[in-house]
Each structure stands twice: as structure tokens, then as C-alpha cells.
Length: 149
Image (cartoon, rainbow, N blue to C red; front, top):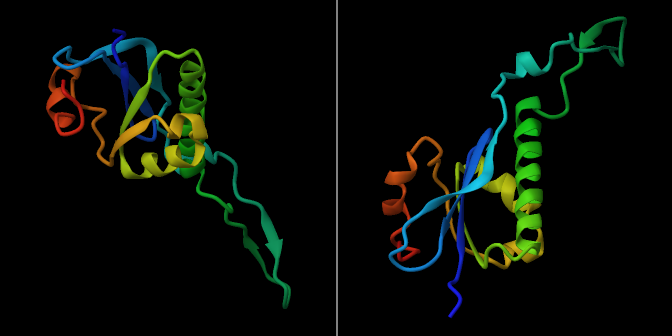
């Protein structure tokens, strides 16, 4: 009988990795090549240019224009989209049947928006917690309630 392969995506807004479980008692192992990192930058580092200026609708004043979206939020959303694209590709290749997502709350929301319907159908649990700094050998206890590790 073929084992049911469960992937665990652990992410925040700038880092992610994927672990794999191949059945009860098999533990977790890192999936080679599925570790993602994006350099964390503050808004001031992303927005290097001075903001544009606009004329006041009444009078002769001018004022600086604020960006319409927070550049850090946009960068984190783009990071989530790139992860979702890779996960969708791996799902098409039939490399996993089930998915558990453990992500910081903001990253969880970003991922929910961009996961394909096919990948969303494989999600068996979501844990809104940032586990990216936990070493792999200490992660199993965080998934005992959803997975027989």
C-alpha cells in the first residue's frame, strides 16, 4: 500500500520551508530544494525614492503623496504568491496528497488568497503560528494533534 504523503508548509512573510511525513511514526523530514527566503526589508529600504507631490484641490499648497499600499505588505504578499506557485506545481507532479500549513497570521492570510483551489482541497489543517525559527527536530510536537508523527 502506497503511503499517504503529507507536506507541512512552515512560513512567515519572508521565510518558508516544507517538511514531509510519509506515515504514522515516520517523523518529519525536510523536502530538499523547498526552502524559501526573502530578504526582510523595512518600508524605508524598499521605498528608496522620495514620495511624489500633488497640488492641493483648494489653494496653492502642495503635499507629499502616500503610497496606496504598504510596500512591506506587498512584498510579503508577493512572497506568498511565489510559494503558492511552487506548491501548486509540486501538487500537479503528485508529490503530496495532504498539506498542513503553519504560518504567522499575516502570512496565513496571504497564502489563503493565492493557493490554487486544487491545493486548498488538500489542506487538512492550518496552524496560525510562526514556527519558522523552531529547529526541524523540535517541530513534531506542534503537529501531534493533526498528524501521527
